[in-house]
Structure formats: C-alpha cells, structure tokens
Length: 48
Image (cartoon, rainbow, N blue to C red):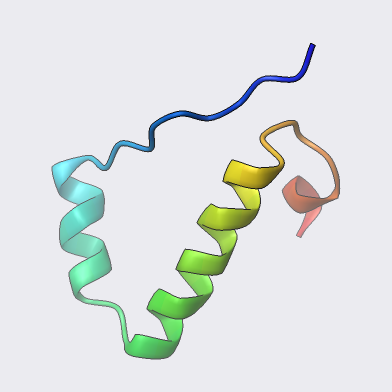
C-alpha cells in the first residue's frame, strides 16, 4: 500500500530559517520538498 502525503507542516523555527535563505536556495528547497511529497518512501533521495 502506497502512502500519500496530504499535508506538509512547517514549524515556526523552520519557517524563520526559510526566510533567511537566498532565492536559489529556496528554489532548491522547494524542489526537494516536492520530491519528498511525490516519493515519500525512503529511496535514493535519502542518500544525497
């Protein structure tokens, strides 16, 4: 059975840290989050 992520929560600490990122870092973070949402099971992404 494949699990689907329905909601992503941000802690206040994480939210503050994201505000301090540069635009290119935010883009990389966004890509990583989308990848985790699309493939929530640990695979090769956890080795990067």
